[in-house]
Image (cartoon, rainbow, N blue to C red; front, top):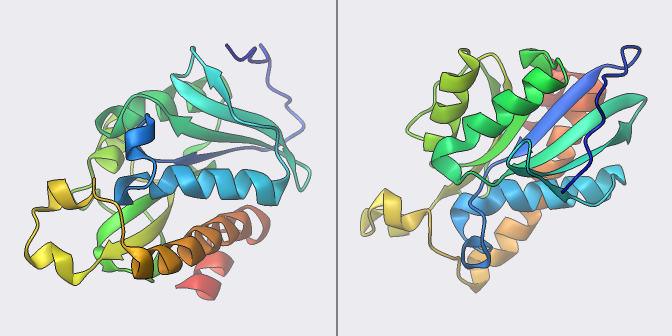
Length: 201
């Protein structure tokens, strides 16, 4: 169990970065877990502490400092449809503003190899985002969408597709997209959303 500090350092801005996915090894290499993979990449890029299980937040989290700001990285362990429980719990505990929350997730409407940064957008059928909006009561958080749409969706129901793994060609693209998603998220922290959007969208 992770020992979570029982205070908030007021002279820092607190940021929360959440990668969405499902817990368990059988989901590791599936489309729906790209948010988890991006958090692992981002943790390395930001040189943050290893992720550790937090019973309080129902998540694997890392709390550290990056660019003079306190940052919480999180992978909810509630399964995708209940991701909002974790996001609300962390944001409430650390008094994090909604505008300082960034969520990284797969997007079935965005073509593979595409990345998009947004704010104030709808869930678009993504149950993890739907849960977060319901628990926070707002769409006013940042999002980094990783495109996963391929021609396979013409033959496979979306609910089955997002839980599939990728083939060798797709894996090459996905590895690059995970790196890009981490860099884009880092840019949101360093440059602000608008400048990051101008760079990546």
